[in-house]
Each structure stands twice: as structure tokens, then as C-alpha cells.
Image (tube, rainbow, N blue to C red; front, side, top):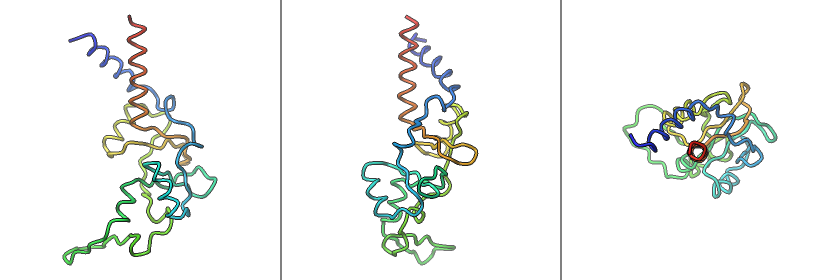
Length: 169
């Protein structure tokens, strides 16, 4: 095994144990936040610059109730094709049908969250299992404290690996 491979594995095993509260983005003021009653037009405007929006219970609140991603907007923008052989209920949520007016109408209510004391390993496992690239960090009352993204984790891992290699030499 080459030295670089050993270093990488050694650092990664230790990086897994880091609590996410020490590397999460705490700048709530810089996160894309909206209230449930935010008009859909404003959501489109925000999403031209962002890939997601965290939805709060009401304006000025930090209580997380949902998330809107590009995929959610695709679902309400794409034309609905109702097949004659569908059994069960059909999702008719659509801009075309006029029943999408606010963030609440399009948001995903089942948000995969993480807590500050969880480890990087737990966060990565949630991201992989649920196929998400970002996790909101919430307290026990579901108040948003920050977020962690796969990009943040990659950047932090590179910094730790670089620091380890510099101090080891």
C-alpha cells in the first residue's frame, strides 16, 4: 500500500467521527429561506440562483416544515399525463391546473434532517441512503440551525487531508 493511500484512509476514518456541528454552515441569514405562504413566482425567482429552498413555518420563524428542490419544480411544471389504467389516486398538483400558488403547495414535507451532534459518517450515510446532497441541521424542536452539503464535506475533507500531510512531513 502506498503512503498516500494509507494517509487517505487514516484521515477519512477519523473524519467520519467529526461532529457535523463543527463544520456545518451556520449562516442562517445566507441560506435560501421562505415561509409556507411565499408565492410560487418568488420561489421561481429564488431558484434561478439556488438549487433548493428551505421552507419555514412562517415569516421570521426558524421552524423547518419543508424543502423545495429543482426536482419538485420539475414535477409541477411538467405536463400531467393521466393514463386510463392508473389504479389509486393521481397527483394532480400542477401549475397548469392552477393548484400551485405558494411554497406550501409544492414543498416536500418529509425532510431528511440531521442534528448537530451527529457525525460526518451519519450525515454521509443519510445523504447516500436518501439520495440527497444537502441536509438541514435542526434542533429537537425542528428549528433550523444550519445546513451541511456534500460540497462542504468534500472541501472540509480536503483541508483536513492537506493539513495532515503537511504536519506529518
